[in-house]
Image (cartoon, rainbow, N blue to C red; front, side, top):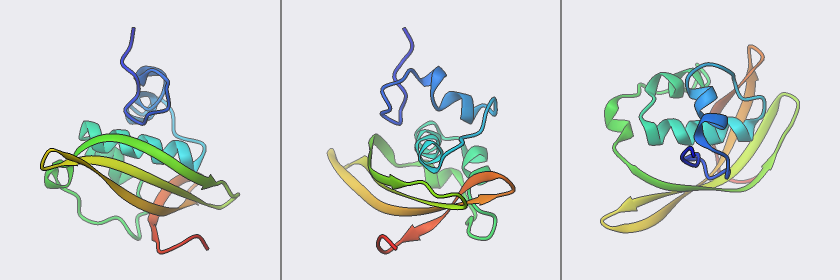
Length: 125
């Protein structure tokens, strides 16, 4: 039996985010991209994070950006659009032995026919 996916979808990792992280497929919704990006942070997949970030907003990423110990992902809500989408989530991490949430409302856009992460929003538009 395969390990459950890091993104907390309930699916096995090979049938969920692994197909995206290995390049066998690309997410067709903003929510599936969000889930795969979370799994990329957990597994330390910097190339995937760069590829799934909008080129205009992607910062310089290094191995230091992957030091956080992530524990689980909770999708609060998502709104899928034709050219832009929004996903609100809580990504839980371990800090000094305690689980803490990172809460974000994220903007995703289609870029060259692929969903990419653009930036955090201050609130639902």
